[in-house]
Amino acid sequence: METNPEQFNDICPLHSEQVPDAVSSLLSEPRFVGVLSYLFPNLPIEEVKALFQSVRTVDDFQRKIDYPFLRKLEAKASKGIDLEGAEKLDRSICHLFISNHRDIVLDSAFLCIELIDAGFDTVEIAIGDNLLIYPWIETLVRLNKSFVVRRGVSGRSQLEASQHLSRYMRYVLSEKHQSIWLAQREGRAKDGNDRTQESLLKMLNMSGEGSITDNLAGLNICPLTISYEYDPCDFLKAKEFQQKRDNPEYKKNPTDDLLNMQTGIMGYKGKIMYRLAGNIADRIKAMPVLPRGEQFAAIAALIDRMIHSNYEIFDTNRIAYDRLYPEKKIGGYTPEAETAFLKYIDDRIAKIDLPDKDEAFLRFKLTEMYANPLVNKLAAQEKA
Image (tube, rainbow, N blue to C red):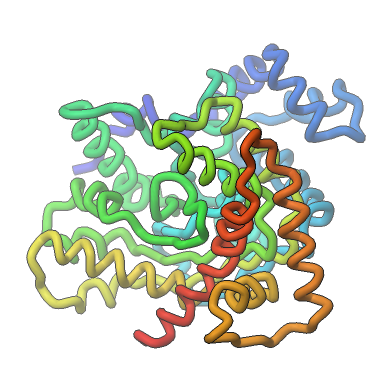
C-alpha cells in the first residue's frame, strides 16, 4: 500500500507548487536580502533578486542558484573538490548516504553538485531544527531539498518524532525515489573522531517490518567519507572545547550557530575529497544474528570502518599525528610543510577570543582534530 505523502508536509522539502510563494517570502525578508548581498558581493542586489524570481521549481533553485554559487565558492575557498566511487552506485536504486560531518551547510551541498556532474540526481538532506533559527532559514533549506529533523523534544514526543522521521526516509527512498544525505551523528564531530550513533540506526529501523539487518539493508546504505585539508571552523571548535571544559553547562547560542555556518561557508578549506564506499546492503545482510543492542553496535562499527578507511590523508593529518604520537612517527612530508602547519595552528589560536585562553589546551585540541582521521584510518586498516 502506497504512503500518503501529505502526512509528511510538516518536515518534507517544499513541493514545486510552493516554490514561487517561498521565493517571494524570502525576498521580502530583510535578513535574507542581507545574506544575498554578502554571498553575491559582485552582483547588484536587484540582479540577484531577479535570478531568484526566475526560480519555479526546486530543481531550478539547485541548478540556477546553488550550482553556480558553489562552483565559484569552490574556486575561491578551496583547492578543488574530488568525488571518488560514483561508479560503485547502482543507478537503478536510491541510496542513503551516511557520512561523517565536517561542515553544517557544505557537506551535503558539495555532494549535490558533484553528483550532478556525475550524472545523478541531487539528494534530499536531513537538517536539525536547532539550526533553523529564523522562519526564513527553514523556508530556504526546504527550498533546497532539505527535510527537518525535529530535536529538543523528549519522552513520548521524541518517540513519535523519530517514528515519523523514519517513515519519511523510507518513503523517500522506496516511493519518492530520491536518495538521501544523513550525517552519522547529531552535530559535527568537533575533535575529528567520527563515530556513527547507534541511536541513528535505531531510528532508521523503526519504519521496517523485518529483522534489524533486513530493515537497514533495505535502505541501501552507502557510507560516505568527507575529508577537508583545512577545517575553517577548527578554531571555533577548539574554543567551544575550552568553554565546555571551563563551564560544563555551556551551550552554544543561535548567534554561535550562525557564525559557524558563515565561517564554514566562506573559510578556506584546502583540498576536499568525497569518497563513496558503495552500497553495503549485502554486508549488512551477511552479518551474524546478535542480540538487539549488539546488532546496532556491529552495524555502526561496520559503517565507521568504511568511513575511516576512505579518509584522504593530507600533510595536515600526518604532521598532527606525528606531533601527538612522536613514538609512532610516520613522516611523509617536508620540513617546510611542517613549519607551515605549525604556524597555521598558531594563527588559529590567535583568532580565539577567550578571556582566559589556555593556549596549550587549544593547541592540543586543534592538533587532535587533524590527527584523529589518520588515527582512525590506521585502526580501520588493521581490522580489514
